[in-house]
Length: 330
Image 1: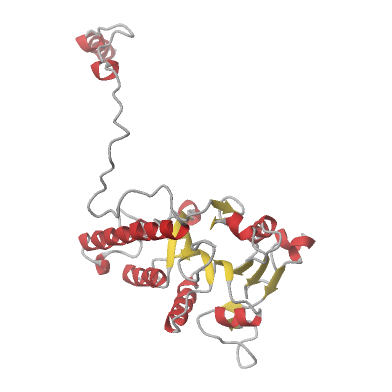
Image 2 (image 1 turned 60 degrees about the vertical axis):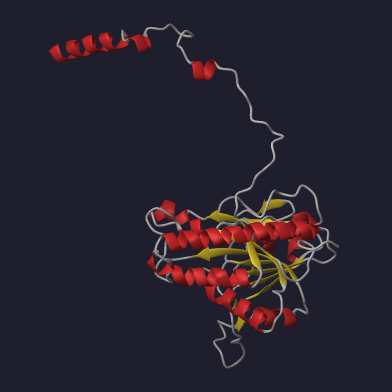
């Protein structure tokens, strides 16, 4: 009881302090009461030395792509400096470390020069698309989907947005599309499914496991009589590293651009599967092949369920090669 009384006395003395002696509205606040002087908006923009310059408000699509590429190279320089400041790639843990996550080193800093929107259901399953309106307006858009599982909400949404599109799905672990397509006759008529796997090397036919027939992207495109894919989606639970390494090496060795306009891939960077150095080399291979990330979205399902590290993330890349409509004026 005595302690409570003493505490009350201190409170009364404290509230009597000069700082609290003003009534509401009388508290002196020169910083707040002073008139606001906004900065001059007509002042010239002076970019930092490493910047390629002020953003061009107008220009051809090719000019805007070139400008975005110049800015992306600045980001690559920043990444190299950041890694060096931490002692080099070999000194960085696979997950990024205690103060960073892996994705902090690989920013989606390239600008898609078209409307960017998320297609598919909220949460796990949806993907970010560059220029969906441009693709939907094409005569015969082509979509490839590697990794179907039991959810086809993304592919169904694409078919609904692009009424002339055809989607080709491949997944050796399931027997059909998910219910979003299987239960819709109109969508199913434009969706083609094969119980096959995708890989960096062909391994199919009677001499191989009948339940694990592997096809390369080049082989599948020849079977389908395709020369170009508008949207390529890959969600193959960790196999994306070998798959995309095979794709990039094949087309680069043949001095050919990657045969797709954009790539949507979920990256499964499990700590035990590779080092930071190996991941860096893989990501740089994609960049060398002409892929530029324009959007990412961490998948935090295992962070929520298991309190694991954030080693899953969706990435959306645009391909600078191929002279397609997303990077080159008609």
